[in-house]
Image 1 (tube, rainbow, N blue to C red):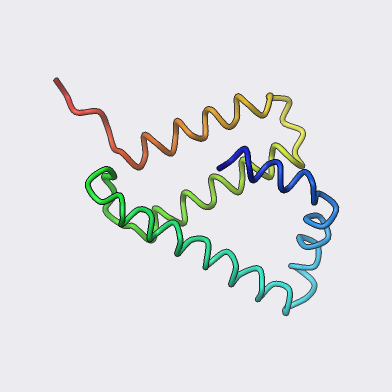
Image 2 (spheres, rainbow, N blue to C red):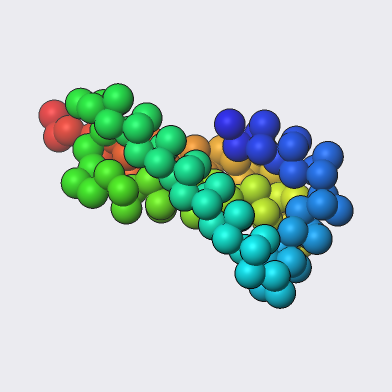
Length: 109
């Protein structure tokens, strides 16, 4: 999913820059973007609830927000940032962080 979002953002890089600028200067654009972010987070909530026993989180809504923020931040850094780390490495670490966070610690043998 992260790789797909990176491809989409790269294809529409100029549009994304304009939307980000408009977010802070146009209340209507901000409201639309906020609604879209909320809808995306609600989709994540539904997925987390569907996965039920596979995830070990206490607050599904907060976990969805954390996942959204992490993925958005990684995508933003890959597409717009000058971090100097290859995209594949960032994606790998983001997936690792999310999977460990959502699944919880490995059970002790």
